[in-house]
Amino acid sequence: MSTEIKVPALGESITEATVAKWFKAVGEAVATDEPLVELETDKVTVEVPAPAAGILAEIAVAAGDTVAVGALLGRLGEGAGAAPAPAAKAEAKPAAKAETREASPVAAMPAARKLAADAGLDLARVAGTGKDGRVTKGDVLQAAAASPAPAPAPAATGPRPRAEREERVRMTRLRKRIAERLKEAQNTAAMLTTFNEVDMSALMELRARHRDVFEKRHGIKLGFMSFFVKAAVAALKDWPAVNAEIDGDDLVYKSYYDIGVAVGSPQGLVVPVLRDADKMGFAEVEKAIAELGKKARDGKLAMADLQGGTFTISNGGVYGSLLSTPIINPPQSAILGMHKIQQRPVVLADGSLAARPMMYLALSYDHRIIDGREAVSFLVRLKDLIEEPGRIMLDV
Image (cartoon, rainbow, N blue to C red; front, side, top):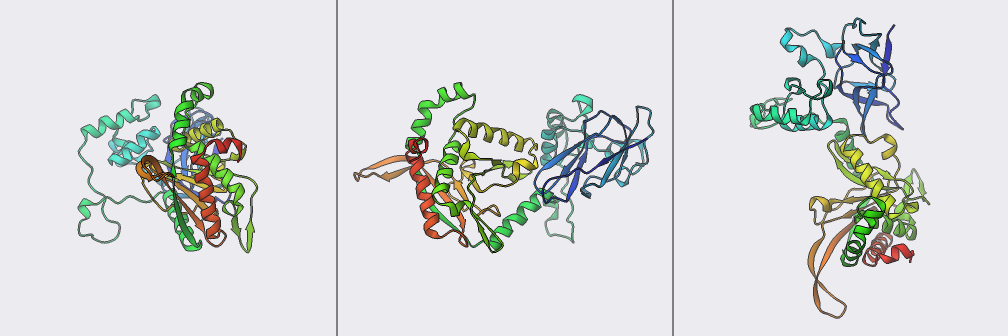
C-alpha cells in the first residue's frame, strides 16, 4: 500500500508553487516528518515532510515544475523492502551508472546550496560528508577550490555578441513576484517621496548608556530599529492616513499597527511583520526582529510571518545607503526608509557649527490617500521622537 505525498495548503491567495528540489531519491528510506521536497512560492519556501515512514517509491514531478495546491508530488511505499515505482520525468533512467547521481536530487544544507549556486557548482558532483550523505558548506568550498570555473550558460534565445562572458539564470518564483509587486506599486500608486534628516546624537547616547544593562536583563542587544518602530507607531496614531489603505472605492483606516520590517534573504527581499507592535516593549521588538531575520536568512519564514502589515520600515543604511526612495509595499500606503548614519556639519540653534551623527529619512507614500501635509507632518513627528527618545516612553 502506498501513501500519497501532496502539495499542502500554502497560505492565503497562493494556489501554486514551483518544485525547488527533492531531498530524497527514489528507493531511499524516509522517516515520518523528514523533509522530502522543497516548494518555492512567490513569498516563501516550504519544506513538505513525509506523511509516513517508508521508501520513496515515486517522484511525480521534477524540480522546476509548477504544481497546484493538492497536486500529487510523489508516493511512499511501505517498509525498507518496498519496491520503488517507476519515476516520473525527473527520474528518467540514466544512460550509465556514472550518471545515476546526476539524475537524482541531491541532499544538501541550505548554506551549501546557496554557495554552490553562487559558485556555479553542480551539487551532484560534490561528495557529501554530512549526516546521511548531505552536502555541507565545507564540501562545496573544497569542491570549488579543486574545480575550474564553470562555463557560462548558453543564451536562451538566439546568439548574443558576448554570450561566452555571460551567465543566464532563471528567475525564481519569489524574485518574479517581487518584480511584479514593485512594478504594480509604481503603476498603481500615485507615489511620491518626502525627505528629512534626523540628528541621532541623543538616541546614540541613550543607547550607549543603557546597552549593557539592557542586554544583560533581556538577553538581546539594544538596536536602533526598536526606537524607529515605536516612533513610527506613535506617528501613525497621530496621522492615521499613513496607516490606511485603499480597497476599491473605500479608504480603510486601521486602529492596529502591524509593522513590516524589510530584510534581505538569500531568495530576495522579504517583509516579515511585527504584529501589534504598539503593544510590544523595546525588548520584544528587538527579539522579534532578530527571530524573523534569522528565519528569513534560513529560508524558514512561514506565510503567517509575511501576511498583513500596515506600514513598512526598510533600513538601507545597514548596506551603506546614504539616500534612497523606497517603493511602497502594496496594499500599504507608505514606507519609511532609514539610511546610513554619517557625521555632517550642522548649524545649531545658537548659530555655531558642530559635527553631528545625521541620518536621512525618506517616506514614500501614495498621494491618492495621503496628502503632502500628512506625509511631511508624519515624518517631522517621527524625527522629533528620535531626536528626543524619552518622548517615546512618555507618549508625548
